[in-house]
Length: 108
Image (cartoon, rainbow, N blue to C red; front, side, top):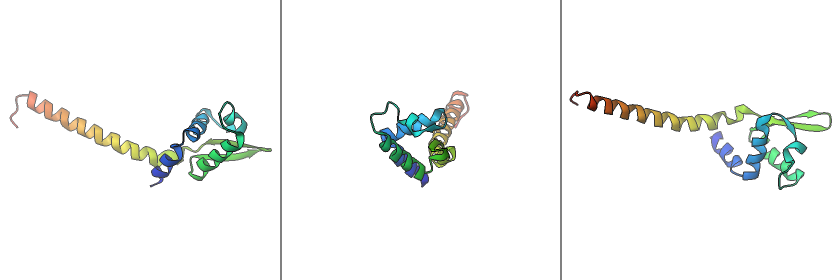
């Protein structure tokens, strides 16, 4: 149930903002923290939680740490959400077929 872990980790609004800032590409902590109402060490802690959840990865570039999204980390969450979409589409298909059959003059 890794999707549950991703949901829990991303439930924090600051952590979600940190995560969303990586959407544009890899960034160092200072760039991620710029303009946020929390300290740079707090952003580092949020990144640590995101990394432990498998949602981001880091690499060293000299003395800087560069963080980027780990798209595979969202795979289970996406599959779980897609399951809801699949159910909704199937229900829509069945309803459309039912409406088509009743509107075509065919006795049910």
